[in-house]
Length: 141
Image (cartoon, rainbow, N blue to C red):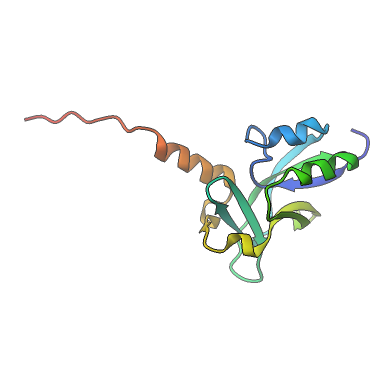
């Protein structure tokens, strides 16, 4: 891709997750996995998708992916994002500032904070492990 806009994604737009096809459909190209500077907090919105918010204190580094998106495709991707998510500037661990998906603070009210997991993929994986049936242990008389 000759020109494009770098977009940092921290949830369901990531490779292999529910909305990744929205990026692929507009010809976006995966660039790298990285993290933010430790200036963000992360919430699970009904365990469907995350919302990342920049904070002035108590932030963590959030794992994310950076994609290069054709300018014409960026609007299409954004229009397909869940309500309450928007685009803003995100600072990567490298110090580079790129556009990224952020959550409106009001969206996070009453939701589970998942910052301690360090990212959506880690949190979502923990949900998958919890939902798997555990083997029954045999009891000896």
